[in-house]
Image 1 (cartoon, rainbow, N blue to C red):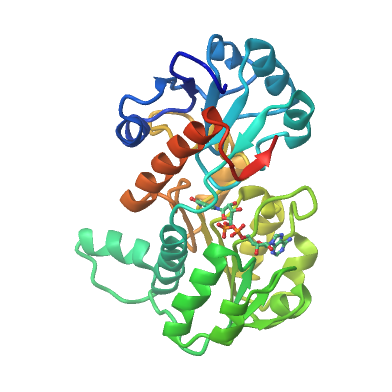
Image 2: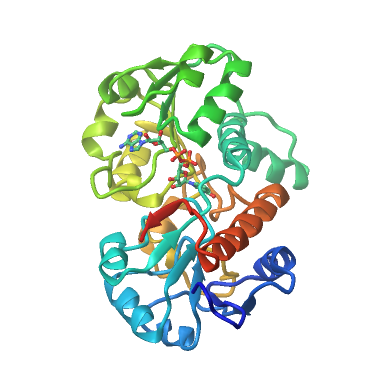
Length: 335
Ligand code: NAI
């Protein structure tokens, strides 16, 4: 793109009202933006005709076929406006010489705080209490919780978000265990004890996932892992849906092995999340079953969704595109 004498043209897929607002403001008059509501997929890739770059989000499909098509249309940059890049075929991007960039950090606080919100809401049954009080029912039966203080929390993945979660839990007085192939000093200085996964499963009252989804750790929480956990364990996933084998999770909810489940992500979420589907018939029976449990709280991939995070996402995305245009050093995922 260097040396181009016209503005860079960017096709922004899966665009919502807040994307227009925040990305539009961060861009000002710099680049030429076009917002498209559909996800990027094999069917919609043609919308990128005439664009230099595409900007995509968590549920856009950036597989080998889509990448080959984008390349043939002249696209040279894939700018993810999120941290995770499990939806991008990096080998295909490399093969075609397409650069892939992301927003590695926009607000670990946002996701960490949402994670803690799920823990507290599940523990103190706020979702049930809210409905009861609105119905004029002030009975406390069934609402008993537990003190967080003194409960052992297992954090899987202690990068930016996992570290922040550990920091907050320190304030609650929760002994914290962690599993991460690359332990970090901040966690160690907080008193976090790194253990292997089996020990983490066996000793934790609450387990929370903060690692990326990779081909190696798909279904890291499967039937065998669940069998090693404490009876009535609380499980929280704000990372990526396919870290959990959802059918095994449902079995464990039915048997009571899992006592609480908090999800912000779901493995088939691209068919469900980010749209108002209140007038639709839900065709995903697995998701529908999850919704029937009183000890399950699901939010629709909103952990990142704070004003601060949206400002940072928009700012970094526009900076990434500008640096690419000017051939400046860039933190790349591929290319
Ligand atoms: P990060 O890259 O700072 O940290 C990830 C950590 O996981 C690293 O320390 C890495 O060594 C570790 N790790 C890698 N494979 C692992 C494995 N198999 N087991 C245990 N640890 C492993 O990432 P960050 O910013 O903390 O984000 C974590 C994840 O949170 C992202 O990959 C993304 O999937 C998810 N996320 C969810 C959001 C939401 O709105 N729900 C928003 C942002 C991120």
